[in-house]
Length: 418
Image (cartoon, rainbow, N blue to C red; front, side, top):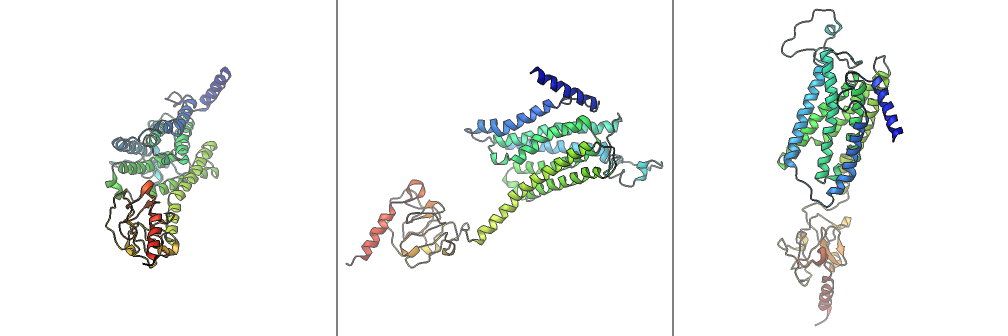
Protein backbone atom coordinates (compact mmCIF):
# COMPACT_ATOMS: atom_id res chain seq x y z
CA UNK A 1 0.00 0.00 0.00
CA UNK A 2 2.84 2.38 0.85
CA UNK A 3 4.39 1.72 -2.57
CA UNK A 4 1.09 2.53 -4.29
CA UNK A 5 0.70 5.79 -2.36
CA UNK A 6 4.28 6.76 -3.21
CA UNK A 7 3.57 6.10 -6.88
CA UNK A 8 0.39 8.21 -6.76
CA UNK A 9 2.23 11.08 -5.09
CA UNK A 10 4.94 11.02 -7.76
CA UNK A 11 2.27 11.22 -10.48
CA UNK A 12 0.62 14.15 -8.72
CA UNK A 13 3.94 16.00 -8.38
CA UNK A 14 4.73 15.46 -12.04
CA UNK A 15 1.32 16.75 -13.07
CA UNK A 16 1.53 19.78 -10.80
CA UNK A 17 4.89 20.73 -12.29
CA UNK A 18 3.45 20.68 -15.82
CA UNK A 19 -0.11 21.81 -15.18
CA UNK A 20 -1.80 25.19 -15.22
CA UNK A 21 -1.07 26.92 -11.91
CA UNK A 22 -4.39 28.78 -12.07
CA UNK A 23 -6.48 25.62 -11.69
CA UNK A 24 -4.31 23.28 -9.63
CA UNK A 25 -6.00 24.25 -6.33
CA UNK A 26 -9.54 24.18 -7.67
CA UNK A 27 -11.95 21.42 -6.53
CA UNK A 28 -11.04 17.95 -7.90
CA UNK A 29 -8.05 19.40 -9.80
CA UNK A 30 -5.16 18.40 -7.55
CA UNK A 31 -5.14 14.77 -8.70
CA UNK A 32 -6.85 12.68 -11.41
CA UNK A 33 -7.66 9.87 -8.98
CA UNK A 34 -10.77 11.38 -7.34
CA UNK A 35 -12.31 11.88 -10.78
CA UNK A 36 -11.31 8.37 -11.81
CA UNK A 37 -12.86 6.96 -8.62
CA UNK A 38 -16.15 8.77 -9.28
CA UNK A 39 -16.24 7.47 -12.87
CA UNK A 40 -15.62 3.87 -11.80
CA UNK A 41 -18.23 4.16 -9.07
CA UNK A 42 -20.71 5.41 -11.65
CA UNK A 43 -20.08 2.41 -13.92
CA UNK A 44 -20.45 -0.05 -11.02
CA UNK A 45 -23.62 1.66 -9.82
CA UNK A 46 -25.46 1.70 -13.16
CA UNK A 47 -24.27 -1.67 -14.49
CA UNK A 48 -24.14 -3.84 -11.36
CA UNK A 49 -25.46 -2.46 -8.09
CA UNK A 50 -28.38 -0.42 -9.40
CA UNK A 51 -30.00 -3.15 -11.53
CA UNK A 52 -29.49 -5.63 -8.68
CA UNK A 53 -31.25 -3.37 -6.16
CA UNK A 54 -34.12 -2.68 -8.57
CA UNK A 55 -34.53 -6.29 -9.70
CA UNK A 56 -37.44 -7.11 -7.37
CA UNK A 57 -38.77 -3.58 -7.05
CA UNK A 58 -41.30 -1.71 -9.11
CA UNK A 59 -39.96 1.05 -11.38
CA UNK A 60 -40.15 4.50 -9.88
CA UNK A 61 -42.40 7.10 -11.47
CA UNK A 62 -40.26 10.21 -11.75
CA UNK A 63 -42.12 12.32 -14.30
CA UNK A 64 -42.08 15.61 -12.39
CA UNK A 65 -38.50 15.13 -11.26
CA UNK A 66 -37.40 14.37 -14.83
CA UNK A 67 -39.06 17.51 -16.15
CA UNK A 68 -37.28 19.63 -13.53
CA UNK A 69 -33.94 17.87 -14.07
CA UNK A 70 -34.00 18.20 -17.86
CA UNK A 71 -35.12 21.82 -17.67
CA UNK A 72 -32.22 22.58 -15.31
CA UNK A 73 -29.81 20.87 -17.70
CA UNK A 74 -31.11 23.02 -20.56
CA UNK A 75 -30.46 26.16 -18.51
CA UNK A 76 -27.04 24.93 -17.34
CA UNK A 77 -25.96 24.01 -20.89
CA UNK A 78 -27.22 27.33 -22.25
CA UNK A 79 -25.21 29.21 -19.62
CA UNK A 80 -22.05 27.21 -20.43
CA UNK A 81 -22.57 27.85 -24.15
CA UNK A 82 -22.91 31.57 -23.45
CA UNK A 83 -19.77 31.62 -21.28
CA UNK A 84 -17.75 29.88 -24.00
CA UNK A 85 -18.92 32.49 -26.50
CA UNK A 86 -18.21 35.42 -24.21
CA UNK A 87 -14.91 33.94 -23.06
CA UNK A 88 -13.44 33.88 -26.54
CA UNK A 89 -15.52 32.44 -29.36
CA UNK A 90 -17.79 35.41 -29.81
CA UNK A 91 -17.49 38.04 -27.13
CA UNK A 92 -15.26 40.71 -28.68
CA UNK A 93 -18.24 42.64 -29.99
CA UNK A 94 -21.24 43.98 -28.09
CA UNK A 95 -24.83 43.72 -29.29
CA UNK A 96 -25.72 46.94 -27.45
CA UNK A 97 -23.00 49.37 -28.49
CA UNK A 98 -19.90 48.64 -30.56
CA UNK A 99 -17.76 51.67 -31.51
CA UNK A 100 -15.53 51.49 -34.56
CA UNK A 101 -12.01 50.33 -33.75
CA UNK A 102 -9.67 52.60 -35.75
CA UNK A 103 -6.48 50.99 -34.48
CA UNK A 104 -4.15 48.80 -36.50
CA UNK A 105 -4.59 45.82 -34.19
CA UNK A 106 -4.93 42.39 -35.73
CA UNK A 107 -8.37 41.97 -34.18
CA UNK A 108 -9.82 45.13 -35.74
CA UNK A 109 -8.55 44.09 -39.19
CA UNK A 110 -10.13 40.64 -39.14
CA UNK A 111 -13.64 41.16 -40.47
CA UNK A 112 -16.02 38.67 -38.86
CA UNK A 113 -13.33 36.27 -37.74
CA UNK A 114 -12.51 38.15 -34.54
CA UNK A 115 -15.61 40.34 -34.31
CA UNK A 116 -19.15 39.04 -34.43
CA UNK A 117 -18.25 35.49 -35.31
CA UNK A 118 -15.49 34.33 -33.00
CA UNK A 119 -14.31 37.04 -30.64
CA UNK A 120 -10.53 36.81 -30.30
CA UNK A 121 -10.47 33.04 -30.87
CA UNK A 122 -9.40 31.53 -34.18
CA UNK A 123 -10.94 28.39 -35.68
CA UNK A 124 -7.63 27.62 -37.37
CA UNK A 125 -5.20 27.83 -34.44
CA UNK A 126 -5.87 29.02 -30.92
CA UNK A 127 -3.04 28.64 -28.38
CA UNK A 128 -3.85 28.57 -24.68
CA UNK A 129 -3.67 31.94 -22.95
CA UNK A 130 -2.08 31.38 -19.52
CA UNK A 131 -2.40 34.99 -18.41
CA UNK A 132 -4.70 36.36 -15.70
CA UNK A 133 -6.61 38.57 -18.08
CA UNK A 134 -10.24 38.80 -16.85
CA UNK A 135 -11.64 37.58 -20.14
CA UNK A 136 -9.17 34.71 -20.24
CA UNK A 137 -10.09 33.71 -16.69
CA UNK A 138 -13.74 33.73 -17.72
CA UNK A 139 -12.97 30.99 -20.22
CA UNK A 140 -10.93 29.07 -17.62
CA UNK A 141 -13.85 29.12 -15.21
CA UNK A 142 -16.19 28.02 -18.00
CA UNK A 143 -13.90 25.04 -18.62
CA UNK A 144 -14.12 23.96 -14.97
CA UNK A 145 -17.89 24.28 -14.90
CA UNK A 146 -18.08 22.26 -18.10
CA UNK A 147 -16.04 19.57 -16.32
CA UNK A 148 -18.49 19.71 -13.38
CA UNK A 149 -21.45 19.33 -15.75
CA UNK A 150 -20.17 15.90 -16.78
CA UNK A 151 -20.91 14.66 -13.25
CA UNK A 152 -24.43 16.05 -13.28
CA UNK A 153 -25.08 14.09 -16.47
CA UNK A 154 -24.58 10.86 -14.54
CA UNK A 155 -28.15 11.40 -13.39
CA UNK A 156 -29.33 10.51 -16.91
CA UNK A 157 -28.27 6.91 -16.34
CA UNK A 158 -29.31 6.77 -12.70
CA UNK A 159 -32.85 7.77 -13.66
CA UNK A 160 -32.88 5.00 -16.28
CA UNK A 161 -31.92 2.48 -13.59
CA UNK A 162 -34.52 3.74 -11.10
CA UNK A 163 -37.21 3.53 -13.78
CA UNK A 164 -35.95 0.06 -14.82
CA UNK A 165 -35.27 1.26 -18.36
CA UNK A 166 -32.33 -1.11 -18.61
CA UNK A 167 -32.49 -1.18 -22.41
CA UNK A 168 -31.40 2.47 -22.33
CA UNK A 169 -28.27 1.71 -20.29
CA UNK A 170 -26.33 0.65 -23.37
CA UNK A 171 -22.58 0.22 -23.73
CA UNK A 172 -22.51 3.41 -25.80
CA UNK A 173 -24.35 5.34 -23.10
CA UNK A 174 -22.11 4.16 -20.25
CA UNK A 175 -18.85 4.66 -22.17
CA UNK A 176 -19.90 8.12 -23.28
CA UNK A 177 -20.85 9.31 -19.78
CA UNK A 178 -18.12 7.38 -17.95
CA UNK A 179 -15.23 8.69 -20.06
CA UNK A 180 -16.13 12.34 -20.30
CA UNK A 181 -15.21 13.54 -16.77
CA UNK A 182 -11.70 12.06 -17.07
CA UNK A 183 -11.25 13.47 -20.55
CA UNK A 184 -12.27 16.97 -19.56
CA UNK A 185 -10.22 16.82 -16.34
CA UNK A 186 -6.98 16.66 -18.33
CA UNK A 187 -8.08 19.63 -20.40
CA UNK A 188 -8.85 21.78 -17.35
CA UNK A 189 -5.63 20.65 -15.63
CA UNK A 190 -3.25 21.42 -18.51
CA UNK A 191 -4.97 23.43 -21.24
CA UNK A 192 -7.96 25.37 -19.83
CA UNK A 193 -8.87 27.45 -22.84
CA UNK A 194 -7.60 27.71 -26.37
CA UNK A 195 -8.19 25.31 -29.22
CA UNK A 196 -9.85 22.52 -27.24
CA UNK A 197 -12.72 24.71 -26.03
CA UNK A 198 -14.33 24.37 -29.46
CA UNK A 199 -15.31 20.88 -28.35
CA UNK A 200 -17.10 22.25 -25.29
CA UNK A 201 -18.77 24.98 -27.33
CA UNK A 202 -20.35 22.47 -29.72
CA UNK A 203 -21.17 19.97 -27.01
CA UNK A 204 -23.06 22.46 -24.85
CA UNK A 205 -25.13 23.53 -27.86
CA UNK A 206 -26.01 19.91 -28.63
CA UNK A 207 -26.99 19.39 -25.00
CA UNK A 208 -29.35 22.36 -25.13
CA UNK A 209 -31.20 20.62 -27.96
CA UNK A 210 -30.95 17.16 -26.41
CA UNK A 211 -32.22 18.06 -22.95
CA UNK A 212 -35.01 20.12 -24.48
CA UNK A 213 -36.16 16.94 -26.20
CA UNK A 214 -35.89 14.94 -22.97
CA UNK A 215 -37.84 17.60 -21.08
CA UNK A 216 -40.79 17.54 -23.50
CA UNK A 217 -40.66 13.75 -23.65
CA UNK A 218 -40.96 13.57 -19.86
CA UNK A 219 -43.97 15.89 -19.84
CA UNK A 220 -46.29 13.18 -21.12
CA UNK A 221 -47.74 11.57 -24.27
CA UNK A 222 -49.63 14.72 -25.22
CA UNK A 223 -46.29 16.22 -26.29
CA UNK A 224 -45.19 13.26 -28.44
CA UNK A 225 -46.53 14.87 -31.62
CA UNK A 226 -43.99 17.66 -31.18
CA UNK A 227 -41.05 15.23 -30.94
CA UNK A 228 -40.94 14.03 -34.55
CA UNK A 229 -37.32 15.21 -34.72
CA UNK A 230 -36.02 12.58 -32.29
CA UNK A 231 -33.94 10.67 -34.85
CA UNK A 232 -32.17 13.87 -35.89
CA UNK A 233 -30.62 14.12 -32.43
CA UNK A 234 -28.26 11.26 -33.22
CA UNK A 235 -27.44 12.86 -36.58
CA UNK A 236 -26.67 16.12 -34.78
CA UNK A 237 -24.35 14.24 -32.41
CA UNK A 238 -22.45 12.68 -35.31
CA UNK A 239 -22.12 16.01 -37.14
CA UNK A 240 -20.71 17.42 -33.90
CA UNK A 241 -18.01 14.74 -33.77
CA UNK A 242 -17.08 15.26 -37.44
CA UNK A 243 -16.58 18.98 -36.83
CA UNK A 244 -14.49 18.26 -33.73
CA UNK A 245 -12.31 15.80 -35.68
CA UNK A 246 -11.68 18.29 -38.49
CA UNK A 247 -11.03 21.13 -36.06
CA UNK A 248 -8.59 19.09 -33.95
CA UNK A 249 -6.67 17.17 -36.62
CA UNK A 250 -5.99 20.25 -38.74
CA UNK A 251 -3.29 21.15 -36.20
CA UNK A 252 -1.32 18.10 -37.36
CA UNK A 253 -0.74 19.87 -40.68
CA UNK A 254 -0.15 23.46 -39.61
CA UNK A 255 2.21 25.13 -37.18
CA UNK A 256 0.34 26.05 -33.99
CA UNK A 257 1.53 26.54 -30.44
CA UNK A 258 -0.87 23.99 -29.01
CA UNK A 259 0.13 20.60 -27.50
CA UNK A 260 -0.07 17.83 -30.10
CA UNK A 261 -0.89 15.33 -27.36
CA UNK A 262 -4.21 17.10 -26.80
CA UNK A 263 -4.84 17.24 -30.53
CA UNK A 264 -4.73 13.43 -30.58
CA UNK A 265 -6.60 13.16 -27.28
CA UNK A 266 -9.55 15.23 -28.47
CA UNK A 267 -9.51 13.98 -32.05
CA UNK A 268 -9.47 10.29 -31.14
CA UNK A 269 -12.29 10.79 -28.65
CA UNK A 270 -14.33 12.29 -31.46
CA UNK A 271 -13.47 9.36 -33.76
CA UNK A 272 -14.46 6.79 -31.12
CA UNK A 273 -17.74 8.48 -30.29
CA UNK A 274 -18.58 9.01 -33.95
CA UNK A 275 -18.37 5.29 -34.70
CA UNK A 276 -20.23 4.36 -31.51
CA UNK A 277 -23.07 6.75 -32.31
CA UNK A 278 -23.09 5.60 -35.92
CA UNK A 279 -23.58 1.99 -34.82
CA UNK A 280 -26.37 3.10 -32.51
CA UNK A 281 -28.02 5.02 -35.36
CA UNK A 282 -27.93 2.02 -37.67
CA UNK A 283 -29.27 -0.29 -34.98
CA UNK A 284 -31.99 2.07 -33.82
CA UNK A 285 -33.30 3.43 -37.11
CA UNK A 286 -31.95 1.83 -40.28
CA UNK A 287 -32.22 -1.79 -39.12
CA UNK A 288 -35.68 -1.12 -37.71
CA UNK A 289 -36.79 0.30 -41.07
CA UNK A 290 -35.32 -2.66 -42.96
CA UNK A 291 -37.16 -5.14 -40.72
CA UNK A 292 -40.40 -3.26 -41.18
CA UNK A 293 -40.05 -3.33 -44.97
CA UNK A 294 -39.15 -7.03 -44.88
CA UNK A 295 -42.26 -7.83 -42.87
CA UNK A 296 -44.45 -6.05 -45.40
CA UNK A 297 -42.69 -7.71 -48.34
CA UNK A 298 -43.12 -11.19 -46.86
CA UNK A 299 -46.81 -10.74 -46.15
CA UNK A 300 -46.71 -10.91 -42.38
CA UNK A 301 -49.96 -10.22 -40.61
CA UNK A 302 -51.00 -6.60 -40.47
CA UNK A 303 -52.81 -5.26 -37.41
CA UNK A 304 -56.60 -4.97 -37.41
CA UNK A 305 -57.23 -6.91 -40.59
CA UNK A 306 -59.21 -10.01 -41.51
CA UNK A 307 -58.40 -13.69 -41.55
CA UNK A 308 -59.51 -15.05 -44.94
CA UNK A 309 -61.10 -18.48 -45.17
CA UNK A 310 -60.00 -20.28 -48.32
CA UNK A 311 -61.75 -23.66 -48.38
CA UNK A 312 -65.33 -24.78 -48.61
CA UNK A 313 -66.20 -25.77 -45.06
CA UNK A 314 -67.11 -22.39 -43.61
CA UNK A 315 -70.36 -23.82 -42.28
CA UNK A 316 -68.74 -26.64 -40.34
CA UNK A 317 -70.48 -26.67 -36.99
CA UNK A 318 -68.15 -26.90 -34.05
CA UNK A 319 -69.60 -28.00 -30.71
CA UNK A 320 -69.55 -25.19 -28.20
CA UNK A 321 -66.86 -25.89 -25.59
CA UNK A 322 -67.09 -24.97 -21.95
CA UNK A 323 -66.47 -21.26 -21.78
CA UNK A 324 -63.44 -20.09 -19.84
CA UNK A 325 -63.30 -16.62 -21.28
CA UNK A 326 -65.95 -14.24 -22.53
CA UNK A 327 -65.80 -13.32 -26.20
CA UNK A 328 -65.35 -9.65 -26.77
CA UNK A 329 -66.74 -9.34 -30.26
CA UNK A 330 -69.85 -10.39 -32.16
CA UNK A 331 -69.35 -13.49 -34.30
CA UNK A 332 -69.08 -12.92 -38.05
CA UNK A 333 -68.83 -15.36 -40.96
CA UNK A 334 -65.50 -17.07 -41.07
CA UNK A 335 -64.63 -15.22 -44.28
CA UNK A 336 -64.59 -12.03 -42.28
CA UNK A 337 -63.50 -13.31 -38.88
CA UNK A 338 -61.30 -10.67 -37.31
CA UNK A 339 -58.00 -12.14 -36.20
CA UNK A 340 -55.65 -9.24 -35.79
CA UNK A 341 -54.04 -9.85 -39.14
CA UNK A 342 -54.59 -9.75 -42.91
CA UNK A 343 -53.15 -13.24 -43.03
CA UNK A 344 -53.42 -15.28 -46.23
CA UNK A 345 -52.50 -18.78 -47.33
CA UNK A 346 -49.77 -17.55 -49.68
CA UNK A 347 -47.38 -16.77 -46.88
CA UNK A 348 -48.44 -19.50 -44.50
CA UNK A 349 -49.27 -17.23 -41.62
CA UNK A 350 -53.02 -17.75 -41.52
CA UNK A 351 -54.74 -20.45 -43.51
CA UNK A 352 -58.39 -19.88 -42.68
CA UNK A 353 -60.31 -23.17 -42.78
CA UNK A 354 -57.65 -25.47 -44.07
CA UNK A 355 -58.90 -28.54 -45.99
CA UNK A 356 -62.26 -28.10 -44.33
CA UNK A 357 -61.30 -29.96 -41.17
CA UNK A 358 -59.39 -27.43 -39.13
CA UNK A 359 -60.69 -24.31 -37.49
CA UNK A 360 -59.18 -21.09 -38.80
CA UNK A 361 -55.54 -20.43 -38.07
CA UNK A 362 -54.69 -16.85 -37.27
CA UNK A 363 -51.14 -15.44 -37.20
CA UNK A 364 -49.74 -18.91 -37.72
CA UNK A 365 -50.00 -20.09 -34.13
CA UNK A 366 -51.61 -23.52 -33.70
CA UNK A 367 -51.75 -26.22 -31.06
CA UNK A 368 -52.62 -29.43 -32.90
CA UNK A 369 -55.75 -28.73 -34.88
CA UNK A 370 -56.98 -25.95 -32.68
CA UNK A 371 -57.06 -22.38 -33.93
CA UNK A 372 -55.24 -19.59 -32.18
CA UNK A 373 -55.41 -15.91 -32.89
CA UNK A 374 -52.34 -13.82 -32.20
CA UNK A 375 -51.25 -16.29 -29.51
CA UNK A 376 -54.67 -16.64 -27.87
CA UNK A 377 -56.84 -19.67 -28.66
CA UNK A 378 -60.03 -18.53 -30.31
CA UNK A 379 -63.22 -20.53 -30.75
CA UNK A 380 -66.53 -18.80 -31.14
CA UNK A 381 -69.93 -20.15 -30.31
CA UNK A 382 -70.73 -20.66 -33.99
CA UNK A 383 -68.77 -22.26 -36.81
CA UNK A 384 -65.33 -21.83 -35.29
CA UNK A 385 -65.29 -18.13 -36.01
CA UNK A 386 -62.37 -16.16 -34.63
CA UNK A 387 -63.47 -13.39 -32.35
CA UNK A 388 -60.80 -10.68 -32.71
CA UNK A 389 -58.19 -12.62 -30.81
CA UNK A 390 -60.25 -13.35 -27.72
CA UNK A 391 -62.65 -16.25 -27.64
CA UNK A 392 -64.45 -18.93 -25.72
CA UNK A 393 -63.08 -22.23 -24.60
CA UNK A 394 -59.43 -21.31 -24.39
CA UNK A 395 -58.04 -23.06 -21.32
CA UNK A 396 -54.42 -22.95 -20.17
CA UNK A 397 -52.91 -19.73 -21.50
CA UNK A 398 -55.21 -19.60 -24.50
CA UNK A 399 -54.41 -22.96 -26.09
CA UNK A 400 -57.51 -25.24 -26.31
CA UNK A 401 -57.00 -28.97 -26.52
CA UNK A 402 -60.41 -30.41 -25.65
CA UNK A 403 -61.98 -29.24 -28.88
CA UNK A 404 -59.94 -31.66 -31.00
CA UNK A 405 -61.95 -34.67 -29.84
CA UNK A 406 -65.22 -32.80 -30.27
CA UNK A 407 -64.39 -31.95 -33.88
CA UNK A 408 -63.54 -35.56 -34.68
CA UNK A 409 -66.80 -36.79 -33.13
CA UNK A 410 -68.87 -34.29 -35.08
CA UNK A 411 -67.21 -35.24 -38.38
CA UNK A 412 -67.79 -38.93 -37.69
CA UNK A 413 -71.42 -38.21 -36.83
CA UNK A 414 -72.00 -36.40 -40.13
CA UNK A 415 -70.41 -39.12 -42.23
CA UNK A 416 -72.41 -41.94 -40.59
CA UNK A 417 -75.43 -42.91 -42.79
CA UNK A 418 -78.79 -42.41 -41.09
